[in-house]
Length: 404
Image (cartoon, rainbow, N blue to C red; front, side, top):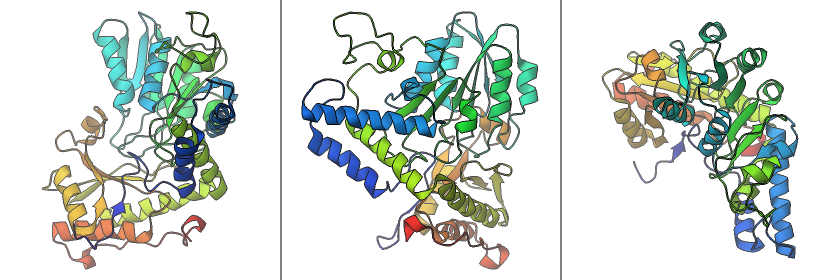
């Protein structure tokens, strides 16, 4: 890549960048100035650390639908949180339903349990866009089905699932539903899901614009998972038993104060700039990019109408491996994309991309029309087609306030 060429970061489905300035400042303050561990002292600094953790928990509760903050745990990442939920509830002999559109963060622990004879696992297929038909889930239900795990939106195609209907199936049948909101928290309001889904898990470092190393685990009142990790919690330290209270039971170990501060700051930033407006901006750029790519001969895009899902565009270029396209995108246009299978082991069988995978781009709050155009222009150059053969991406709405 030419050193003078701008870096066009489009790997937001993996992690967001750049982080908003207030998020960076909050993390730096926690690490540089506070000098205490939350829940482990009475000093003034310790009280400030406690306040940071409380603010983070309250902010997380707002993101997942204004639930009771004391039903929200903040573990060190969404993969850990999903494992905590799955292993915390599952019992021997259960049948668990998952889908072909899901991420390995749920499929691998479920596969691990199945291989050891703990559970039976039913995988419901998706279509060529990554959509899971709730009727197929209902048809797959068995008398011993006790858990439904599914991704709110595919991290490969961006296709949004009907979470309310899917979780309703589980609720009506007395099963636990676990929603992987990795690709929707910060893009799709989760309030409607919080009323029907039993467990919601969301990372903070993707569309929420926060730091890595922290996630949101919300569990409906009345459900008490077993703790996956046991250890010090800063409370009830005079006994070997884990605390009975949900947060204490689920948060063993010293909390990451910088990540907690970043979580609270990222939610505040999202709220100040209107989560809906940020989502609309990203979707407009994704639609523009998709339209331009779809007009290029030999380029195949994946995913149906986004149904107000995450601003993701996945595509393949005939005659090229996806990794080759990703390298060329950066060399030709400075575009940082991701290629391959995207930690989603099963969906590529449905997409017809089991060999080579796909290239994926995603548009965040700081991306612009030029970024969408650059992707299309680079693919035109790679494939050797003239611009006249391609419909140029339309302009999205005016420059948003957070970019002004």
